[in-house]
Image (tube, rainbow, N blue to C red):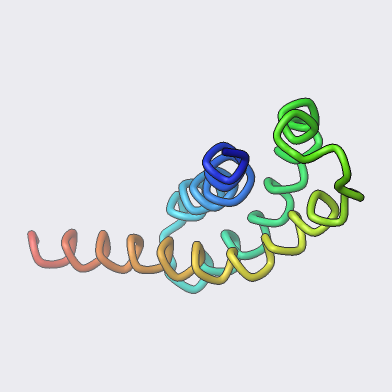
Length: 100
């Protein structure tokens, strides 16, 4: 049950927030870099703010290693989110160029 709450909250949500912020720029390269850098930072903030939820969904014998690793997972998931953000920016550029 903890996976059904924890994965969307602590892995998917930071990626979605960072990718949304990354798509606010005009260059796909900048979108990728912004998203890749912001994903671990957003992940850290959500982990700190979501500590009560994290405590509720982890087993009693857990030593907390997974909670410490969540922002570090943001580095790897940030690459995926960055690719998605760059793709959206590139697609928006392609569509705006073809309408002129």
